[in-house]
Image (cartoon, rainbow, N blue to C red):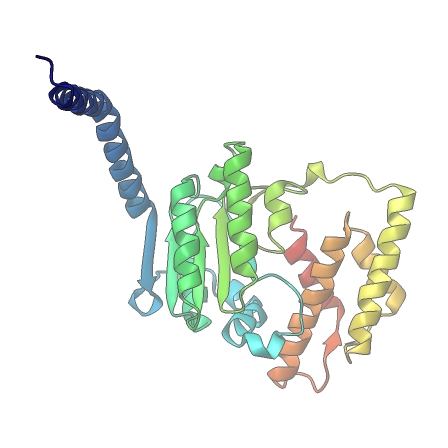
Amino acid sequence: MFDPATGSDSALLLTEEILVLATIVGSVAALPAFIEFISERRKRRERVYLSLEDVPVSSLNPRLAGLDKLLEGIADLVDRARTPAAYQELKIGNEILIIGPNQSGKKSLSQRIAQMAGIERLITVYNPRDSDALAKAKGIVRGYKRKKVMLLLPRIDLAYQTNDPELLAELDALIETTSEQPNVLVVATTVWFAANSDLDNIFGIKLTLPGAALNPADRPIVSTEVAQMLSEVTHFYLADAQRRSFQLAGMTEEEFRSRILERVVNPAEIEDIVVLCQTTALYRKRSKLTKTAIFTREILDTAIARVIPR
């Protein structure tokens, strides 16, 4: 005689067996994909490990020759990195682009700047085309809240040559967010530079080494309307500096503005130039080279060259 309870238990057992078998079959089918996922994850971690380095600056021993004059010429930038609180009213990002040919000492110069500025940790992303390394570097930088850090991006031009919008967006975000931190100095090196390029626009300060490959031909021609706007912007930033006790020495306001307007093509360049003038003037006052914070022709020309190299 048929027992409904027994039949129900048998059916339930069969269903469970089928489910277990299906699970096993599904697991076996998914195993190659899972193994591939684990393998890819391991490879990504290895790439990050090879692309990224975080070392104490005290362990560095950069070999640098022939750039003593350049080091003397950036004493104000080094002082700003060493004592950011003294320059906190100057609104400019802490990012420097070093332009020079291969094997010209760009990385060694960066390491020497780190030493002179009293920076404690040097984080180097050797492959700026690796988005995983960029993300990891950002996490490391954020972890050093009380230490002075340099983020070094050697051969950043290789990343810009990929023309990968997603990668470049990640790289730009890394530079912008980290350079806004007062304890972080972002330094990148390149063997190639073109005016008004994305690489030009992301860095406010450029240092040019002898033999650097510069291409100024791409700077656009400024229309009459834009020229008028740039003139007004220059007047605004100069007046703002003068309100904060910076003074012109050996040149008139008209000469100051005209020397800037001969070279700039956008308001950001004007702001960077005037702020760099303030940086140098404040450094010279702090060093007791001058009694007041003054803008001279030499200071202005240096600031222009740092923003618009040629």
